[in-house]
Amino acid sequence: MTAAKRFGHAVLIGRPNVGKSTLLNALVGEPVAIVTHKPQTTRHRLLGLVTENRGQIAFIDSPGLHARRDHALNRRLNRIAADSRLGVEVVIVVVDAQRLTSEDQLAFDLASRHDGPVILVINKIDRLARRSDLLELTAGLQKRLNFAAVVYVSAIRSEGVDALIDEVFAHLPEGEPGYPADQFTDRSERFLAAEMVREQLMRQLHQEVPYGLTVVVERFERQPERLFIDALIVVAEERHKGMVIGRQGQVLKRVGSRARQAIAGLLGSPVHLELHVKTRAGWVDDDRQLDALGYSS
Image 1 (tube, helix red, strand yellow):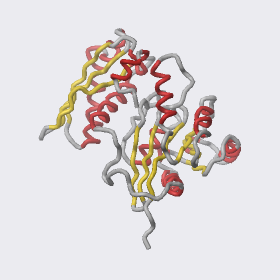
Image 2 (cartoon, rainbow, N blue to C red):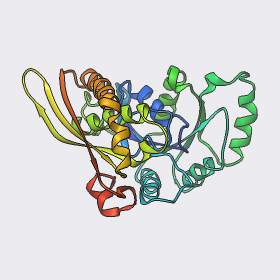
Image 3 (cartoon, helix red, strand yellow):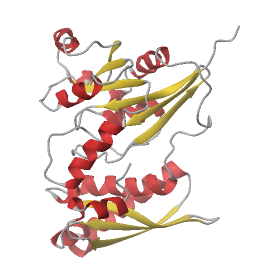
Image 4 (cartoon, helix red, strand yellow):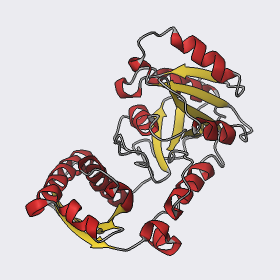
């Protein structure tokens, strides 16, 4: 007798930089989420799909829960993260094996309001000098919440990923897959292209500039020979335009070249990419502009 398929949603929550996006990419096997070492890299609710013979898991990545409330963007990212747990079957709290901070408690508090199973994932175990330290860490964390399971992973090495998938499947209800088997995310190619441009900007720029910029794709057109993309880089202050462009346009050229390669690799087509930079003063603290720029879900 064939076992019934299982289907459901599992959300990854945690403070910034614990490796949620790297973990999502490792689970799905595709670069669904952009990854940098800077906080607030993830700004949207991202869905990545794992489809197997036993069923389908819709994993959801969410912005890092943080204590900053100084801009409307910060407050909105926390709201997106909190709302991401609504309607899911499993909540996965991700922590960094190397250290805990006060912001980790935000994730535990959010998970405590979930009626279903909560799984603890301890990430970055490859960076521990002594694996025995995990026992003490685990014992302390299990006092905070009644976890359905604890899974140790190194997302960057894809270690423990299969064990996490097994645990999630074990806690999902029976049901047919909710998405096509060949689909790995519910986000559009236009969205993925914009995110890949933003990823390169965050990697190339330093200081405060990455937090005050976003990317909007204004043209996305597939033609037989290649994909044509025009992307607008929006900065919050006029002085940031020069930093984004760089001396003799070198920063913008480097961003364009690397983003073009990444987009072509993911979407399987040669890419013609045009980048432009525009100032929209104070967009990070303007709810109307945040809505217009896609920060509503």
